Amino acid sequence: MELIPNRQKAHYIIRDVGKRINKKVFPHSLRGTFATILAKKGFNPFEIKDVMGWSKIDVAMSYISMVGTYVKEAFRQKW
Figure 1 (cartoon, rainbow, N blue to C red):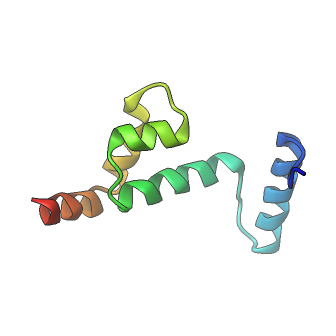
Figure 2 (cartoon, helix red, strand yellow):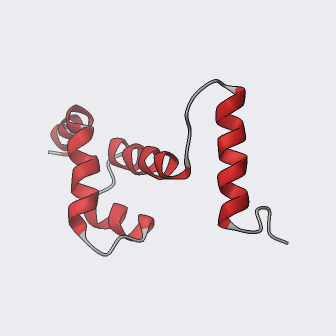
Figure 3 (cartoon, rainbow, N blue to C red):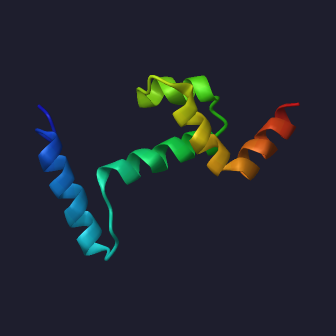
């Protein structure tokens, strides 16, 4: 059983949640937030690309660059 039957229904649900919290929320912003969280948690660009289903690494790199200090700190700790 699917929780959300189609993309349009998902869009309506997300939009309604945004109205309840008085914020503009849309599906793409949730994907971006998830990608940013992955970058903050130290996932490498190839892992983020694969999880998100992107064909190019450039997109993952843009999310990693947005969280710069978190990634730099993770890099420092690992080295």
